Length: 424
Image (tube, rainbow, N blue to C red; front, side):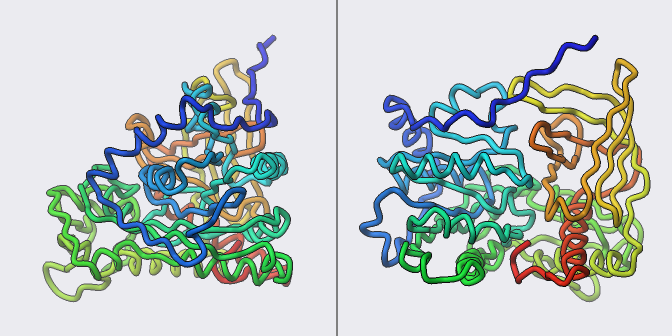
């Protein structure tokens, strides 16, 4: 009989930051403040802002946490963090005030924990995009955000950082020493406004505050990134050739991208733009290429053609913060029914996870996760997280992420409840 695997204690109350660790959080963030010299724009209303309040932050790189720490210091805060952040350091993360969650799940316990943070008269720091931005632009926000803010009845502020994706993009984490970066600290909702506004109006204000574009910001400020491998990894995001339309044949090296199918080649300039070496430059702005890919996925979804087919996958489980457990090898399908992963573990027992379209408005993906196993999709329930790694096949986890969102949007339209712009 199998020994039960211990699960992460998700219901434990959040800990207020230990007094002796609070100076350490500021100290550990200080080197990046020196290197990147962020310009902090404190907008009207934040001068006298005191806890308790909710701080909603955009998410482009780990440096987001460091800037947030500098801005709120010396006030205490609790940060909502995904479970993989706790691996091997649960005590430390709990002690500095982190709250564990599993991404893209409906977690009512988390709502109670945020209420506890605010009752302690501290700051609840939330990254509502729930993943690093893939190309330095706003990711979809959950529609439940407005309801949460209205329920909590405390001020809502935003911290929107600029330059963190350009400095260390999700697809190539090398620090490019970009400086100065920038951050906008704004008060967007007061308790009186939360009481008088509808949930939809609250959501509209949050979405408006979350509009950002790191590559446009870079160009506007003339910030150059001379890093000689700056294009490497970008093929993870830009997986479809805009010249011939072929998927999964874009390659990258040094400062160039090219298509192995048609031979078209582009240079990524020091200003973060793309330039075709011959012929038309289809997309000079990287997010425009990404959104073109989304439009193609949307068409597949709405015509009923989208499917990955059966992909062979290695499956790892993360039931707690101790370590990854390899479940075994199996198959994964993502199509108009949602995600299905199944296989047989090392004891010969079957495993399966099914996440239908209505249950998942977006999904989390990783590129070359931990530098070991390649690209993956991580799929969550309230009790477990499965990291699924396709192998020996053509695929792009970026396309799966786009399709997850487009399938959800299409489903909402089909039941007469379309998503508001920027929300899911």
